[in-house]
Image (tube, rainbow, N blue to C red; front, side, top):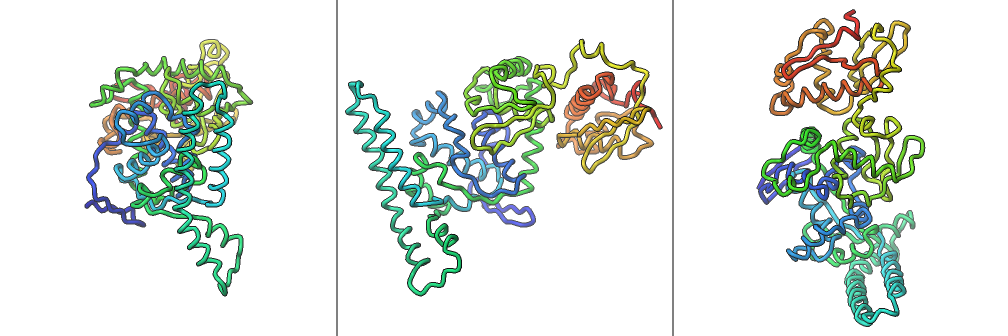
Length: 446
């Protein structure tokens, strides 16, 4: 048994860890679940409606459907998503599952009845196989009714306990909500009628969990490294099945832009449907994750209907998404005799460039590695203009956590971010494979 702590909670695991984080990040199916977990932790949430995990059944893609059919490990996509959620949290030691809860028993009964009627109406009367379809529907909803009947026993027991004669109920609305909730522990849920009901009423079934902050932080750092490798087309070791179909990163960005062109841009925002996850010309979760980490886009992973994605600049092109500036824009840039004074702030983390006329441009530093690299460089103002060895920066930050390649990429990405805000500053940092220094062509030493 393995026991872990994050200072506030203790987590125990009977099984050994089977996979590394990269194994889960490689496929968008698991990566999206991880993003939902991280976003929940960031927002201080400890519950999920299963409907939020399903994302409008986007998992109904051929390779996942085939996987269920071939292995017989799961009888539905919904049950697979739920059990995958359980497995990721436990295998990566991210925390523990507390309970799975049917949030409103009476609503579930009504919803199952409504769904059965709608399913009957949707049958094509001209279909020769309609009789068999009716039989299948009857079997399906008979199973759902049976599950509700089984849950009726704990439901009635709760009703009696909460509303029994002589019981002083201070808040009837709160008591009614409590009486409608039926909880199952993590250990019992797999054999519970709740597992069948998640197919019909996923929005009424809720998972509660406790997360390990230390492990969440470690995973966040690993995701940053993984996305850097993804953007540089680094091959993932031991996962050849994902290399065979992988499209080059630059081409994926082009395909992503082509996809966005089909959607409506409102100001700087596009509402992206979850059906984007079915597009095979780019890896949607990785592309969205990379651009969000780089500060090019902003959105909330945990939204229920669609992702409302805000873009840092328009028009949306591969160049704008990567923070590059078109040549046509460079020709309109001010002359390069203008120099800026620099000031660096850690809370919040940003770099301010002030021109001789007093105009200030604040560049937000996003991404943990970028923040740490710039903190090292600007920690001592007298050394900020020194030649910095990328190796030395890596050693200061811990070479196991931040490699020389990661330091170089952080500087490269920050250069692009500055250039996007100030096209005339084409390279704030001059750098090569081994060192970097502030470019005195654009900034004053004082």
